[in-house]
Image (cartoon, rainbow, N blue to C red; front, side, top):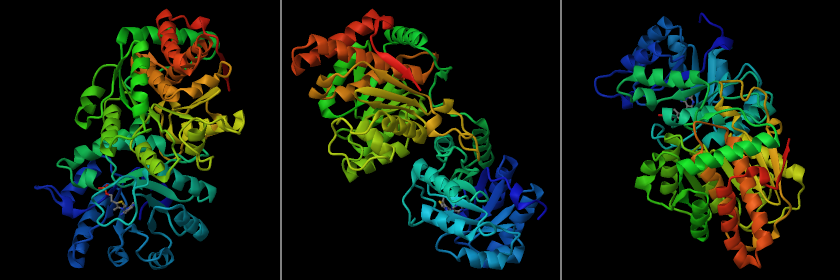
Length: 542
Ligand code: TPS
């Protein structure tokens, strides 16, 4: 073989399919172009080719791979792999059982397995080392390459779950690649979001079929993927993330600076939100020197995201069609503009949960904001919620801090859990990602977390959409920020501003009706006075 199994580089794994070759290209020419541009592993997967031709092609591709010192894996056809003495085989769950495969190919060959569920990892862990060398985790996203797929796309969270299981089962020998619907527009996000909870593991590589095989310039396609893999930082915002502030004094100075920037830039805050919140959210946005637009027109999402200082608030309280929501997420991610996600009543019903999970799997959110019930369920720490309103949780602060950090870690976002105390955790890791080593040991419990407190404001719960408008406030401040900003500081500033306004309004109002009006007045006054040093709230840093 000329190399040791341990040294195999899984980073960019090409799986072939001759049925999608563009005119003027051949299987050989596409593989060659890909190998010249950074592919590190090749799998021949020719479902519709007769055995004789398959063997001829395999021998040709094998010569090519040897020239580039890249191992060649054969899909499914153990007989072909043995006949040409390939470097390994890849089988799916419905193909020949792994112990038989291993018995046939012997201990030296690479054996790969397609895996979609944690129980399959349990199985490979039971077999122990020497059976499965690597797994293809998928499908991550929908793909038309695999005909009649038996599994649903698992999203980045599903990949992380598989990585978790490998760690829990101590299957350290088993390497991993993610596969299914991977393209340059989503690979950075997959590499960034998919890590095990113990911070020790991320995928060892990515595997693609159509992105290279169906490309008119396979070399350019491979080079582009290679560049993403080597980049190591997912810049999902068009402003750079500077270091975070450390003390109250600096934080309030930062808040002052952010409000000045919002005043100057007058951000466009695109709301896709529930009907109850629309009017109030628009008024809160205007009070904060920003322009609201309540658009659910799919076709204009990209134009809106392209407006300087645009930000998106996505609130799933009453829901726009899924294609509208997905188009908006795509557009704001593509233009590197912030998205605040408010998964209202996240797990109140199975339908809501599925919808929110679908949205969570299709984008990178700058901030995820929820009440205690929503954050607990997103963290996987709560049973069914009773309704969509914030209900005071029986659990203590420690549990909510843990849940907020878990959400921040899982989605690599700024997580906000609002309530009497607001908890804000930063899981962004400044966009850093790397193959294999996860978050380099950083776990949810290590994430920076701040508690903002200003005494209880019970009347907040007596008006509609008060929680949703915290989302509007965060979106205004994120949208308005300039060249250099720290998203954690921006979100803390927004939460503090909203809390101080709530307290002020509660002392001025006569009941819930006037509280509504007073809250908008208080936001307007605090914003225009721009004197955060006078804000009464406390910050506790953990
Ligand atoms: C390493 N598989 C899962 S999704 C998919 C395939 C072929 C299609 C992806 O196409 N893992 C490895 N090899 C395999 N053959 C599989 C899994 C099975 P596209 O990239 O065009 O979306």
